[in-house]
Each structure stands twice: as structure tokens, then as C-alpha cells.
Length: 601
Image (cartoon, rainbow, N blue to C red):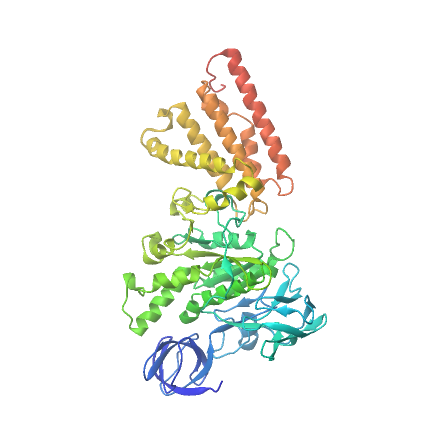
């Protein structure tokens, strides 16, 4: 497309008003100023238009040139994405550093994918086959964990007239040629270029009836996430949002992870960039980065690029979804993204809504979260993929009534509420089980009963009831002390303590407890609930709670969270057997004496 040139009229931070280009379109990419800074058109008038610039605008001056590229903001999709670290507009940060050092020079243009690197392409289709958009024509063993699928572009359909043999090719080499119904031949390469503002198409949405196992007991038990679902994790400063999202990204059983640090502190992203390449995937034993794409747009980077970064992340996630993978997208945090919206809308002079946010805040959040889902992808046959959206929200002062949190809660179906008091007591994850919720329990019940145990929903309901009763009793205990409570209620307090300390608390740094297989989670909860039931039965027979607290099995229950992943079933069997023996001995002693059993002196 022929480039058209205009000029800068005025500059207000990242917002630049320009003139001189007719017929320019919304969201068209422009090059601004003598340094050709990257910008995007966000407002079009009769004689002028406004662009948001994705780089620092200091030093720009009126009358400098503005050049239209004719393209929308797009990302390059293909082999080479996995293991990459990008900025908010898909420029590889290692490449930027090699070009300009530790401080990124303005106006640099770096392609998202390496066009020179050769990839091992294996064709999976033959000449003469009829293909439609989304069909897989070949595979590339991109990493030791993920095999990338080369797909027919959305606009191409017809007969395969040629396809390259097995070998090594770059992402811009023609690997296949397709003749359409009009006789035109289309060359297909391994790379696709896709606009970020609109979602990639699919056939249809399907039911979200499979859980996304996170390895975090409090989440998998009380507020589970479904594959393709949407979730939010709001919390004040220091409550553990980023650590919890990091844990989710590290251990969730999604095949591909896309993590976007949107306006977060640079040291947090640095920690992720340094730590994740050293981590091992729990299933394959390979480096975790082999199935991860990181997008770093920290708080000291230009604010406009922060607004674009989550759309870039969503488009990359959809690309892997279309290959048939389950993808988890982590956005940390959508509050910083909303602040970028607020700043830009303010500079545009748009009428502000609550707390200065633009009136379209809710609709923009909905557009982002609705790009999640579990779908039948394009292509012949039936291929399923999912994008699970999890966003952190940073309400000022931990106030959940502020606009971003409220707008998010109207959209998402899983709510992980971080509690400042729990965080202050060094309780991790500091998720309040009484104020958090998941609307996917009904969707996942069949899977839970078939894959965990037929009694799983009942165990969860019983544990939830104990925690709710404990919360009620705590108010009484603070007034009159625990000794004023009857034995049955003291048993409830003790059972709830076991759930909170022996089950819900989980160390993010312990080599075993950092991740808990869902089967181990089931066995742990079952042991504690059974112990609670037997304790309640013993108390009803007249046994004092203090007598039960002398059981040696309680030490084993307290340590069962660090049972190794590969031998936990044997450990749990041993604990269950010991628990049965100690209660059986207690009941025999009770039957023999026929009197209440006090604590041993």
C-alpha cells in the first residue's frame, strides 16, 4: 500500500494530533516524527486525526512528519513464539537490548519472529487434498514440549497443488501452494500476521466442563477454574496477587502459558524472567519456558503500549488455541491497563465517568475477557482448544468497590479475593474462602466425581460449612474465650484449624508443596473431613476434644502436604490406617469405661 504523509499539529504526552492524511482509518498504524515512532490512530475527525504513540514522545515537535502504513496493529504468529520475551507491541526484548543496550532507543523496528532461523517442517497433507481455513498442513517441533501446527490462513480455501518435503525452512519460505475455485494460486508460509483488536474466528463455543488444575489447593477445591473460563484475583498491595498468578502460570495444566506483565513493577517481571527459565515443567521435566510466552510492559514503559499489550497477548493465545491447545493467559494487572485507558481518554478530552475512568471501561474489559472460551476451531474435522483468562486487579487501598474491580466482577465467573489480614498473618495463598467464589462448580461436578471421587462435591461442601461455622464462632471466642464453648463447637474450631493450616496454606517456595496434584488434594481433604466426622462422633459420645488432640496421627496430617508427588498415595493410605486405629482404640476405651474420656494427665 502506498504510504501517505501528514504532519504533527500538537502533542500531549502519548497523544499526538495530526493532519494532512485523508481517508485514514481507525486503529491504523502510523510512524510519528523524524524518529518514526510507532503509533496507532484512535480518533478520526474531518480534517485531523489523533494517534497514541507507543514510545516516549519527549522531543517531538509540531510540523514533524507523520507517515501512514496502511496496516492495523498486528502480531506475527508462527514458530518462534514459545520461549520469547516481548514488549507490549511484540518487539523481542533481547533483540532490542542487543541493538540499543539496557536503555531502549526510540524508533527501533524489530520483527516479532526471526525470519532467518530454519525450523524442521513435517508435512501432514498430500497434493490434491482439499483444504479449508484452519486445516493443518504441517508440524514443527518448536520445543521439547509443544509441536506447532502450520495452518491454512483464514482467507485461503482450495486444492493443494504443491507442498514441500520434510526439511528445514524459515517462517517466510513457501511450504504449500493452494489453488482456489477461481484458479488463483496462493502461497502459504509458516507465519501468519493477525490484527490484535479483533478476535480470531472459530466455529462455535462449547461447554466448559473440564477444570484447569492449578496445583494450588485452595483454588482447585473451593473456587475451581474451568478450561476456557474467566477469573479475577483482586487484592491490595502486598496481598500476593503476582505470586499467586505466577504459581498459576507455572503449574496450571494448560499446555501453553501467555503471561503479560501490564504496568507492573519492573522487579517483579525481572524475577519472572530470571526464575522461569530455570523451572521444570512437572509433567515433561523440560524447562517451563518451552511452553511459555512472556510479554513485559512494566510501569516505567510508555503508557500507550500498556493499553495494547493485553490485546497482543490475547491474539497470541488464540493462535495456540486454534492449533488445538489449552492456553492460560495471565494479565497482571488489568487495573494498570485501565489506568492507561483513563490517561489517554483524559488527554483526548473525553467525558470522564466514575473516578475519572472512561465510560467505555466496562465494555473494553468485557471485550478482553470474552476472547476467552473453549471452542471448536476452524478446519476440517473436530479440533478443540481453549483460552482461560485470569486477570489480577489492583484496587487502591484494597477497596473492592472501585470501578475496575466492580466492572470485572460483572464479567468473570471465578473470583479469588485476596485478604489483607490473611496476608499479614503470613497465610499463603491469602485467598478468603468465604468471600471468593466460582460459578463453575456445577459444570465440573461430573468430571470431579469421575476423576477424583464420587464424594468430592460432598467433601467440599462439608469443608466449606466448617469454615463458615468457624467464622461465626470466632466472634464469640473473641468475646468470651474458647473455654466457654461446648465441646461440639470446640471440635468445629479444631477441624477448621486443620483445614486452614494443614490443607489451605501452601508454600510457594517449597520444592514439593509449591505444586499439589489434584489427586493428592482429594486425598488430603478426604482425610481431614473424615477426621472431623470421627471427632464429632467421639465428642457426641462424651470424649473431650483435648483427648483427641493427643492423637499422634495429627502430626502425620500436618506433614502430609510435603508428601512427594510420586508416593503420596502410599503416604495417605498410611495416615488413613493410623487414624482409623487411633479412633477405634478410643471408641473401644469409651465402650469399656462407659464414661466421658478427659484429656490424659
